[in-house]
Length: 256
Length: 179
Image (cartoon, rainbow over all chains, first blue to last red; front, side):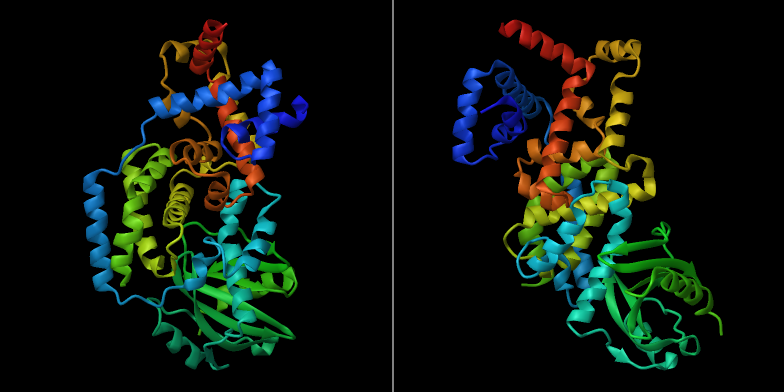
């Protein structure tokens, strides 16, 4: 084994992350290469020092009690909505492995942290849109009548989203549903534009607005604020159409 | 089992781990407590979907998400664009001018302090590896990055720690003594 090859594996070896065959050849290399052996020792020495000198901080008992009390209170007060079972499933592996793999593949190749942080909601919105489309539960209340959709949504949320049909411009309201975004229940308005479906997630205006326009896995995500709400549109229509549409909805939905 | 009892059985045992992570990410006790409290409520909401397998990783993921939400609101500058920017920042902080470096060394910063000064992206993988003793795969899942990125960030984290002035002095002595 040459140093180049061993170099990137030394730390993995020190972390117990190589298989036994690799382990044996690294051991052999370490015996004959002082530079790599020193590197290996460095990782071990640093670990020993961290474990000896850096405290593992335990939750103060007051915090533990407060959390228990909060949880008990919160569990007693609110009749829980159905847990959004899919939301975490991809984290724990398994059922949505395929979807998770696709998402992971998308995430791979970028380690841009704030970019990804900003993307979280866009990714989640696209996931939600895709899931609704695939599982064919795009619409929980089917109606092109804004006066039917709005009260249906309001009854299921702690806010009342403005709802407006834009059929005269080619964007026909076909219904709505309730989704979860960033842990909050949100209203989703579903529009039809030619052969495309557009999901518009509506929630009370946020302090930190996501960035204006993104493409995620081939879907466009456009954002706007207006009428006291935060509007996030997801669709496979072109970016400029989607962007113009969400701006329009945001500024006009609240108007009579 | 109700959500409440599931929380007590599955999540509460990992409150220390959650707190340790939040404390190391946020750098102070009060913010850590806020983050853990908020994360616990989020965890309660989704505990119905948690399978028994990896409650710790699951809760740490929530704590981390909650922290980043908090951080975006309160300290957006800490969230840097990429690993390269993080490195530049760390180099600036750790060793811009020799005089300051000497001063810091004289102050004899502890290893904890040096770790606390690591850029967030490197600090979090190091905490998860060395204090939580999680595998690369578990870390990758929590931080939502590929295993290869876990490895490169760990290497950077260790390299930066070893380059921080105080540690360099100690390493120098240790190496000298060993010979």
